[in-house]
Length: 567
Image (cartoon, rainbow, N blue to C red; front, side, top):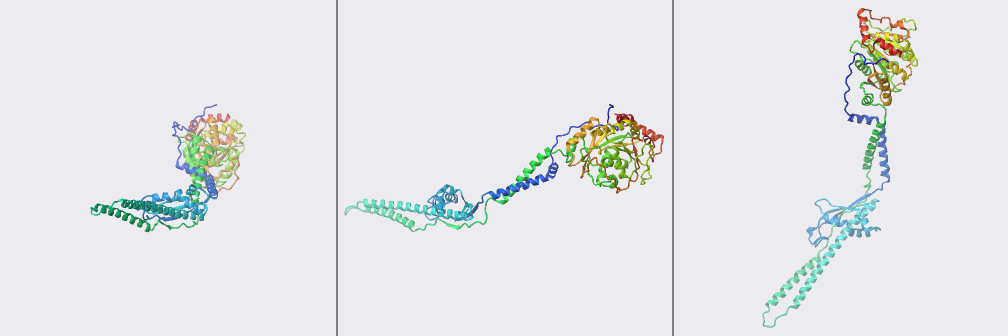
């Protein structure tokens, strides 16, 4: 086995240690676009679950009654001073079991007061003496009745409490009056003729105390107790307060989004398809030379049909990267990864090389070369006589490098053909600046390995969203088996045609050959044709020397190519 070296004197840069991959915002949005269907489905699922939960959740209605708790005369439920009445204290009293016991009787509630208290919430705005009594119920009418019942129960409780306090105070005052009256009765009047001033003074003091206490009793008994009033009765609510549809919808959307992103990440981790350049470079270990979409229609080549288009410029970018910077020959193998690959990729690259002034040979199976020849309007290759075919009519008069189509025969018999005609292959390769081996339109791995033995480096065609990482790794592994360096890849975006199917002959929408490109066609079996001087180039000693120099500097030389072909 002859050693396979890097071609064209291209220096090999030392492998740099790559930093660990980090997720970027662009990759996140790329994932979101790829899994948009999954995310949308999860959003719809979240909305559906939220709707079902909203339907099965029991509705709750709330009604609020407003109570004015202005201080009453005399005393409050908590203190003897009217100024001590606070809404904080009163709000706790309004939600107590004592008030709940009164409201229970009013509502006819069959549960305990503690159970009824769970339905009421009493709040008070700051710097006010107003209580907001809110009652919740499963029915609108029940909510209104409950709020009003608690408001009235609180006022009743407050009234009862104040009345009890007044009664207790009057009772204490009456007791004090009776004590003073007994004290007056116990005083002894002095005999006549003695000083009675002390007796009279004590009696007058007791009587003044009795009069003061009696005045207080009269005040309490004549005062009107005002525990407060219902400033606003609770009305029947028109809609349920819970559950809130907006909260359920927002929760469903959030749940669906989170679930969708998690599923998208999970599927992306298990996804074997190459979706972007970062994935391709990570799997292949080589850069993506160009990204483009195949805009050309079947039966055309992008560099001819739309030379100013994006696809044609992408191939020019690849050609600039691959083309040798010295006079040595470069053999480039163009292969696809997977069953879905753009058939015209190798032809587009070869035509681009030729358009840039490089003598280019496009070599491939007979079926592939027939398809290219049909599109370019080139006649059949000569049989065994070795005579050149007629060139296309649209040829520029300027002497430029030409494009040669080289048929390598049947794919199944490729190995035998190369062994039998290795010298012929070496002859045609010696006259070229660039040789493009079309492995896109082959089916068998053996053919890829056979042509990989001839190539210096390879360019892999990747179909975005269709080529799998496994297929890409398999192709890279096969190329590594024969020592072919993977220079990089081309990432295409378009509905692909199935590989292995010949393109139907079609009339090109552009000229058969662009101005400045001559096209010759050979079959590997017609050796004499390879030894003929290329049209448009007069033989000279300088050209012979240049050809010899290119031959000697090529990968392994002509003899090496012949030896590889025979293996």
